[in-house]
Length: 409
Image (cartoon, rainbow, N blue to C red; front, side):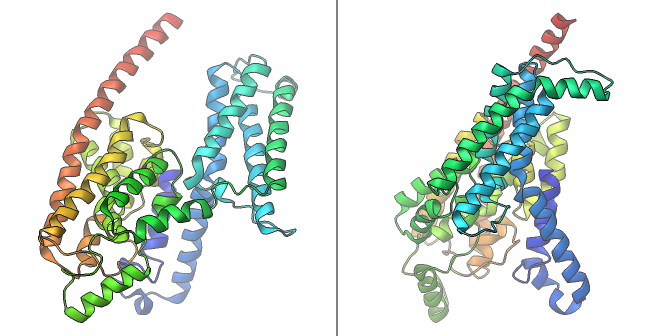
């Protein structure tokens, strides 16, 4: 599901967007018929909405399913109950925000960037079924009477789960709690984008990377787009007047440091990880996921690999997610101070491959491009031991599962 959404995200941001790189290279404004563009834009935007926009529904469902299944409870009923809870909380969250009789059902709670809350809801519902539900043994054949029996056995935990959801939803409505609201992230994003203090930039980059790893991707997603802050405009105006960006007033501006070097449009972590998987891994399933997501990841749509690998809440990837962007920014700041590369001051079109962001942002400065390639190579090298550790853990888990199946027989 996430991989499908990643491809349509690529189409939406990279082809059917007038501000995208591919759209402008091929001059689609003149070469693409309006009917085709309108249809493509509607289809890609719609698929992104029904995959990433309501991904929290899928996350809550499967979180409840696998939690209940772990304790041999009716996982399907648990999944249905979790969907009711997460959608109800989402609706009341939007209702309390809009203060009108018509609320937008597609809340930030349901977005893939707020997946942590959905996973928690699903887990809690699964635990309710653990303590209140009856044991369930799957059957190859299901008939009406058996389904009725299942529904009756799941009635108590379902009522309890929905009651918890009602309480949470009412609390959200009465106290107007804006879960995952942009207001709580804007201060972080604004401080990071407008700061020229390298220490603050590195610390806030690590914070946003940690939130992204933990399932709250709104701050990091906001940083993948160009900013129109006063400091960014001052840098661009200086570069336009003087013909170069070496002595801009804000050399270490957070928006350019993070976007061009820290995360490189998600290339520093996700694309580097994809390259390492394709070169070093021996796991066919993981390699298949990496191959399927290579194209979207290269153009800045990492959610397919983020979910499919998974990177989300995986302790193996915590340190790389925190340290690699910070290290990239430190190295880039050193290169800028030594005048080896030029600061990125120009706007970059959406859908630009992460490795090329600094190149276009510095108006085609070739030393900057070579430096970014070397920096990306360093990121790939740093990811190699992470993949090796992951392979060892996977091998041990495989052996453990085989032994467990043997004892079960």
